[in-house]
Length: 242
Image (tube, rainbow, N blue to C red; front, side, top):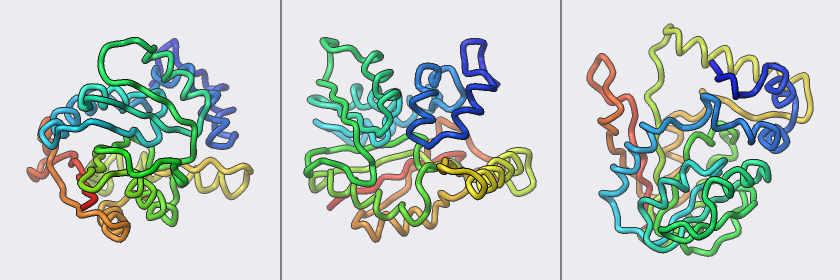
């Protein structure tokens, strides 16, 4: 599952028994050599789909980690791309990946909790990849409201969302088992490490986005393939602040 340069079993165990922030600080130097990094094909598919919605001047990567989403913003935005994360370790890796002086829009990094974003309505585009499992369902509306407040009128919040695996499939039981193990871990150990795969259900997400003030539509990411019934394996959520 991991490359030889990736984290060891012991390192992953230490991370799993830490808080979210501390865990990602520890994992940061090797994060991009794990399967947790968003695959390039997903980043490319989102880039092409979102590029048709522009143009954009300023962009925000919410929970940016090591900066994969900022790489997308640099291809889409003309003036400025900002990555925000609460892990100092992940931000350090992101800064190293995008050194100052490179061509393209200016890049800035901000350490902050996404549940309390320190921005005025300044962005044309916000996006996020792979971070929503770190927020409990009760926190989701507040997170979306913070993103809404960071966008200018007409700004768009976009992110990919995959179709759930078929009930009874290997992927289904894998995610079910991971979430079950995480619930047991959090019941028995402090600090908690919130990471769940099965709590970000599309219907609930759309409802929370709408309640936060967004007008929402879905766009198939056809590049990522189709399920046996012909439905897309992934969609792009496009939430607009009007």
